[in-house]
View 1 (cartoon, rainbow, N blue to C red):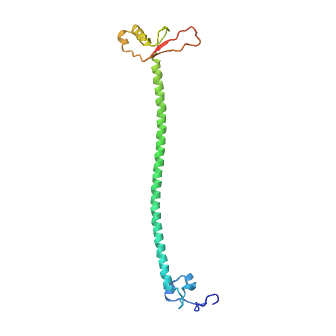
View 2 (view 1 turned 90 degrees about the vertical axis):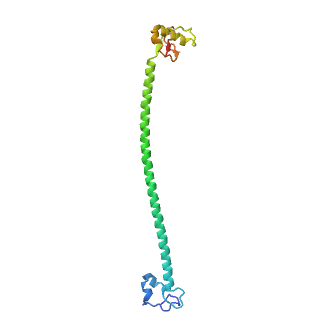
View 3 (view 1 turned 120 degrees about the vertical axis):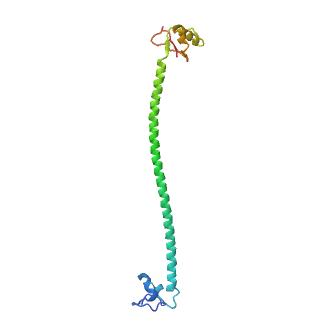
Length: 181
């Protein structure tokens, strides 16, 4: 047969394999290295043992890879469930923050209404002379309230402070009212 080296003299166009070579694949049967020859360094038994070693190594690596993939699949599942739980919790917390903001706005309105109600209860006293010093004003206002109210009720009145209101711009001769609260 033309094209083959001289160390494969028994190859011909119509050769057949018998015995242990019969279970080889067609590609292996046509390979010159797998043919039996007396001077061939590689025999069929050596090739079969090498193939078996390669198959065992391959199967070991495949089993290791499958175990790693299975482990990674479990880890990915745990990560996905934890991520889903975190995103659900974030959504819940965002809703709670929005509800707390609404409650805060409602409470601010209530506090403003309470402050306005307290200011509505302030006494506005007009006609207090301008020459009374600020240090004496609490005593003067207390005496004025006792004189205006029944002395029994005047004891229950609390005076937190006082201030003089600003003079009105459109009334140049008007006096500033004093306010006690």
